[in-house]
Image 1: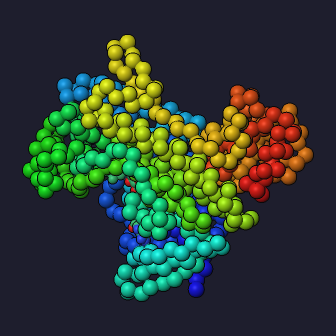
Image 2 (image 1 turned 30 degrees about the horizontal axis):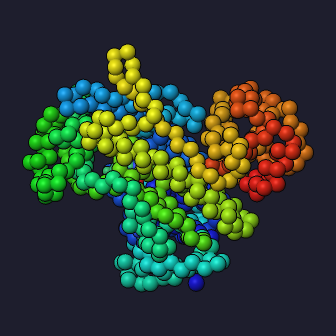
Image 3 (image 1 turned 60 degrees about the vertical axis):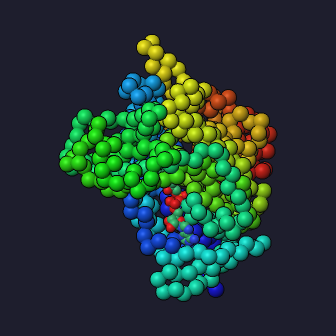
Length: 486
Ligand SMILES: Cc1cc2nc3c(=O)[nH]c(=O)nc-3n(C[C@H](O)[C@H](O)[C@H](O)COP(=O)(O)OP(=O)(O)OC[C@H]3O[C@@H](n4cnc5c(N)ncnc54)[C@H](O)[C@@H]3O)c2cc1C
């Protein structure tokens, strides 16, 4: 039987990100996907700075950046076209080292992720391969899959298996865990168009039309791509709503038939749900397999990429040292709290778009002197997990620092973590591990001062695992977590 370090089921954005992050360590990876290639039509159109930083770690930003545009933000308007809420995304580099928000075409990203995987000799991609059975034992996972072209069955063994197999995940079903419905279920039509010519009178921002008669969304996507989404009423038939007549009639205020080509029209059941268990022994679920949310904030895929970034280095640590259940369990505890906050905020945003103006989307809403309300992006915290819970810096994202004009500190770590030590601290043990002394880097030293620390231990996924102010505190951190530096 063929054996691998890791088997990944599903090569969508979550599987593509996870495989790349694990492949950087040189592990043998089998990727199984039941389709013949990536999904060619548009789905996700937005991602944020934190996600771009993960793409930077993988090494795809240089090429992928050409296929993105900077997103200017979202406006919510009422049925009289009056702006009732503004969600600006200022064109300013964030702590993550990127702009707050980007627009893209999902197939462009999936192509880049696949292209990068070709550089890794120990990564084996098998398309047309549908996973049928997963048997989880103490030391390995046995997988049966079917090649849907030649109808042959195959059995393989691997040390870990991660299901990145989307909303109807076979992995989740085999784990026998349930999805908890969090309450939002609505049918929406999604229409993707390509403009035949430039059309300057279409908005540059995303517009959420909070119109009780017809809640709708407009998205300014990359190049000449534009998207409209609208809610479908209970008495409307799917067939009628998807007819050319209905769609062009709906689009009348913005476009006529001669100005654009419909690339795709479809109906989605927007849902909000979260799996009860995200792991069982050596089997994990990531991305849509673990959680679903409506697309109003553009965070569904982003959440899957955050999962991948959290889990990849934990599996890598277990493969390099030894399997550790307690360590791996923190994947769910750290990620689920964060994703729940995105789901809940997205649901409130959905209610708002459904024209329930009294809904408070976030606590972070301010009014300007003209009475226009504006909201800030949310930054949900990481849940309990690794590190000491009393440590106020634990779980904060570590900013991306430039060491000089061309080099960023991020380039110094990703497979392992890193220690940042202020020059006031002389710790003998820490010198055995990768570290940066802040002496020559003023910004880094100011950062440590601002968070009231003399040393921090940063995880490979760029979050702070712990902070310390004395040799004793550094030693306790290292005693418990030195594997992430080795
Ligand atoms: C209209 C719309 C708009 C959206 N907009 C945004 C947005 O702007 N921003 C954002 O972040 N998210 C957005 N999303 C969500 C985003 O598209 C999804 O969250 C994302 O595609 C999920 O990625 P994934 O890798 O988890 O799963 P998928 O992309 O669904 O990939 C799953 C893969 O698993 C494979 N598979 C399934 N079962 C098996 C099996 N048994 N054996 C082998 N392979 C299998 C499938 O072939 C597939 O390739 C949007 C979604 C929709 C529908």
